[in-house]
Length: 116
Image 1 (spheres, rainbow, N blue to C red):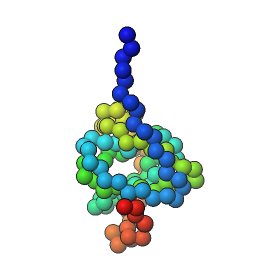
Image 2: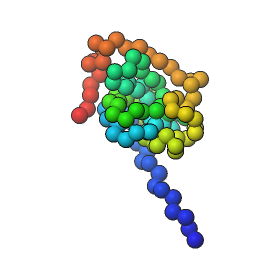
Image 3: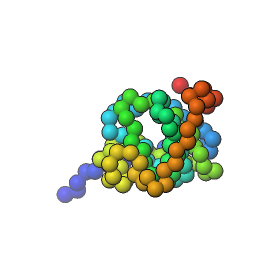
């Protein structure tokens, strides 16, 4: 007898310099990066995050997320439930040792183009 496994979440690609805007509608999601690096801004948060391959970031329900590929090669990323995150570590970054912050003044966020 074969046990059915739930389908894996789709891996998405973001080209270098490309920007994508998301609204998180489900609780307990994590942004996981498998290749490249993403620059992630959570609307209203004081700090931005740079998430590299092998790292993940907890995304709160209702969050407005702006992300840009911050690497020379395309970034590959997936949204997974926190229980399925690769690290199995608690919410937040999966690997804080490689976490970087960048503070951007609130009046500068409008300089990054957003997609509807």
